[in-house]
Structure formats: C-alpha cells, structure tokens
Length: 344
Image 1: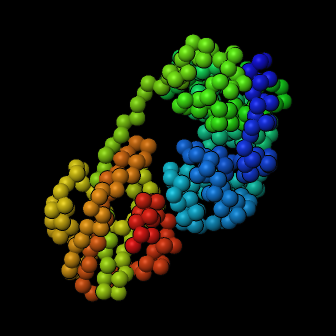
Image 2: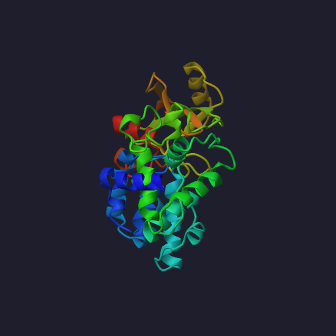
Image 3: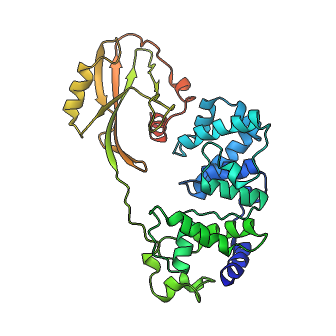
C-alpha cells in the first residue's frame, strides 16, 4: 500500500526522540498516553519525567496517596485522568500482580482506558494489529482519502478504524500507529500544513481537490457554560488562611481551593462585597475586604469558561482550622489558584 510505504520511512527519519518510544513497557506507554490526552507533547513531557521518577513502577504509583498524585499532576488539567490513573494502578498492582493485560479487548476493561488508549498500549507494547484513531489520525486519513464524514458523528470512529486497520502492514502495527500519529502532529497539522514538502502530496486527494483546509469535517460544536467564581482568601492576625477540598463531582474534584462564592451571572464588585458581608463563611469578625485582581482572570476549560476574582478578607483573631502559607503549598490546587498563591 503506497500510503504505508511512504509513511513508515518518513516516521523513521522524522520522529521525535521521546522517552516512551524507547520502551515497550506498558506502564510507561500507558502513562504517556493518559498524560497526552488533550495535551501537547511539550507540556506533557515534563510531567511524564516527574511521574516516572516519583513512581518508577506501577506498584509505586499504586502505593502513593491520591493527594500526592494530584499534586504531581497539578497544571496538566483534566484531573479525572489522574484519579483514574491512580485507581487503575491499584487494580493492576494489587489484583493483577503488576501485570498489564496483553490484548486490546482486556485493556478496554480497565478504568480510564478507552478505545484509543487500549489500541495504543496493545500495538506499541505487544504489536497487536489494532488501529489507533485520535485527532491526528482523523485529520490525516480524511485529507488523504477525501473523507467528508463528520468526525463528531456516531459512526465516524468505526469508519476510520476500519480504514486505518486495512492500512496497517503485517507485523508493523506499532510503527504504523506511531507513524500516522506523528505525521499528523508534525506534518499534516490542523492549520496551514506545508504540503509542498509532504511525502504524500502526489497522492493526497484533499490536496489535489484543494480541500485541505476544509478537512476533517467536524460539525458538532461544544456548548460552553460561563461560571463566575469569587474566591475568598481569608487572613487572620497570624496571616493564616483557610482552604477546602472540592468534594462534589465535577471540575477539580478532590483538589483544594479557597472558600468559594459562585454567582449565576457576572455581578458588580459592590454586589459581591455585600454577599460576602452577609454570608457566614467564618465565625471571625471581618475587618477588611479587598479585591486582589481588578482584572477578571478567565480560565478556559473544555466545556466551561470560568471568570475568577480573588478577594482578600482580613478577619479579627485566629481562624478555626487556619493554615500557614508554607503548608498551603503542599496541597494540590487547580493551576489557576496555584498561580495566584505563588504571586502572593
């Protein structure tokens, strides 16, 4: 097949030297694939190195405290990945004696491992002939074969998996899958790819039809919710503050934050001041309330845009369960809160 015969040599010549490519250890491959979901390699690589240093084996990860795992994950986002990673590590270490399942079908049964991750581990570690289909693969195949199927539609994944499977040369699932993903990441990029230097340019249907910018087709748009967070940074006469764990399911579950006042709409500073004064967050008498960031901090998540203000609330006496700032830094926070703490 011309596609594979061109793709694989390109990959061998152009691939990035990444630590998870120098091993068939399913533990390292699993870590890398979970970390790189919705994350660029440049951002994920330092986390991978820190994780493998802190937890060299699946047993080390399994024995860790969840807060330690979340702290190391801090800033990588999509924190449910870290919690699922930790739970799955426990299952593999304590129930499977540290042995990862060796087939795509068995890997799919693990918590937090979907079709893409199972296929990546199965093909990279065990060379099982199963295709990986991620955003890069959708883009490469839709352009090369001029496929106008909406990649957000229900049947798209099956269609692209069947096509990718048919392209994999015998006994080369590992190198083909890594090759097509790398090709999408480095060459067939989302915007303005340099098609003049592409090894597939003489047979790419989208290039011939001048449709490169139109593919892949994705019609479904993510609905974004706006939320308005006002964090209360309490401070007592010893400059202790208070933090709390987010225990409700949703964003930042089991991470820490300051006491939160959330409003449905964007309220004026005067309204927020009155709300803080009229609600009981602590027993101490409030001496002063001051807005720390006149400019709203906007923090974008996949389905939510957060509009965040931090308010310093000085109180009289000592706070119940107050904590010093040095201790605060040991807890796992959402990165937007951690960045604020670092500044103050």
